[in-house]
Length: 217
Image (cartoon, rainbow, N blue to C red; front, side, top):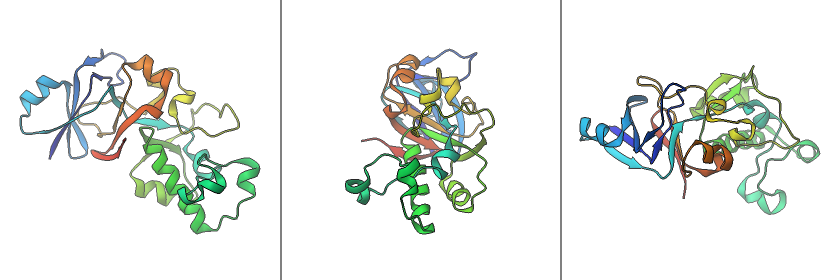
């Protein structure tokens, strides 16, 4: 089924392309089939389902520190929040945990799920650990090299790709292009400056290879 994702502003991530007010992305299966103003896309594809999101549409984001977040942090189960809190545990708190493989696997899966809530569709690897490599492959998230990743700037992990980004271009693996993989996200902010300032916690939808994998409340 053809699906159109639309928002108040489309940011393709292409530095040569201007933002598109009232922009839309047409998705056909797992690929981008068209980009442009919503009225033009709907006129060309009148049978497509339309999903409207508040704010801006962008390419899916890249989490540079995927390896660090998945191997050097524990992501608590909601049933553990009263005891451990809901933030990733690192350092001494991580070292104090008993982590058999089943519990560690659950942490990795939850870490990947939480990345999706921040519009992440690509994670920095490589992932040589079997547990992590398998979970990333099953999630559908793209593994990308993290050779150019900035260093972790503080002692706490951060799931927000904009924590280390000064612009959208710093937080995406590639622009949206016709024929490219349909990895995109929607954020409830008015423009790029608002997105960089507020961060990816404003994510309201994440689309991974054409599939809506996260939808905010």
